[in-house]
Amino acid sequence: MTSEAIQPDVPPSGTGCVECLDNGGWWFHLRRCAQCGHIGCCDTSPAQHATAHWRESGHPVIQSFEPGEDWYWNFSTEEAANGPALAPATSRPDDQPVPGPAGAVPTDWRSKLNR
Image (cartoon, rainbow, N blue to C red; front, side, top):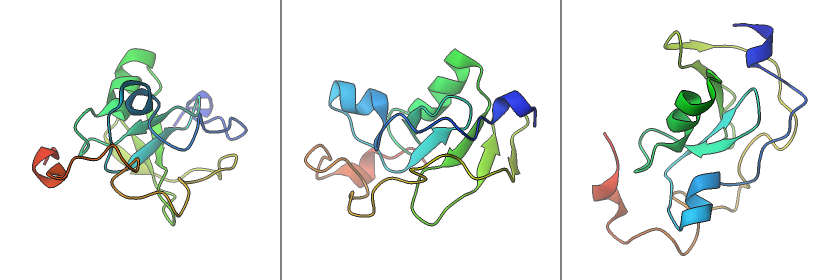
């Protein structure tokens, strides 16, 4: 991985998917851009904003933004990787529901996941 693909000192953009929060959407799991800190929803989520961010920005490396997970993924090489610790916060809040955010998740959410 290139050194510019991971910027350890950049904080996350928030505690949830930026685009889902802006447009009333919801997510299954969250991913953090290792370069700019953008929080987007995973590919299982209906809107797949983390992948969309990579395509729009060219920032290839994400890290899980789920509690207890610190794995990286490189979209360009389609490979898992290791990397340094990123600036806090390193995950969504423990009390944030999955899926989330609270109040925005439809009752039939399981049928809306990408598989």
